[in-house]
Amino acid sequence: MSMQRILQNPTEFARECKKKNVTLELLQEAVEVLTAHGTAQMFQGKSTRGVEKAISSAQLKVWINTLQHAKDHPDESGKPSKKGEYITPKEPEWSNFVKSVMTEIPIERMQSWENMSLNKLAIEAEDIGITHGLKNAKPKGELPQRLPELYKRRKAKFWDVQKLSVN
Image 1 (cartoon, rainbow, N blue to C red):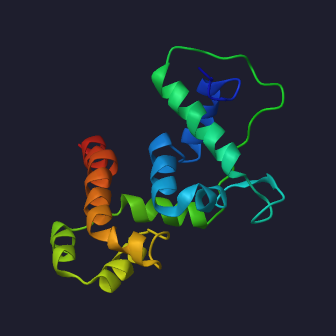
Image 2: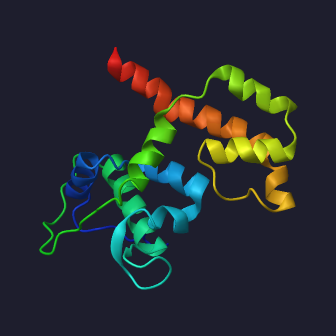
């Protein structure tokens, strides 16, 4: 059994992420709709491949593993990191993504997807933040399932949670 790589101090890293409005759920949502590569491009780092000054997809996976570990083990404190792990979202890219995820999609809009052509669904998908799987026929054919799944996932993970925290 191989262990997933995590950072030395998961609890401290999770605290730093929270201060910068980066959560496990937001990172997972970003990977789902933008791909790992697209998500990694929204954070400053030292990768020399792809977009310059971005983190690598591998580093993003370590961050997600670390945040998952911190969530699963809230009482565990790790070793203090000497160098510190810095998470720096690129702006306005990250804020715009968070805003698009947190903006509730009206149920009427979601219901209208049932009667749309694949091309119109692709336009809808792009409008709500999905950037991959919109051009090729096979992934585009999955949009009638992907969009309602996105709606249910965001409702459960973000919109309903947001309403609870306001009350």
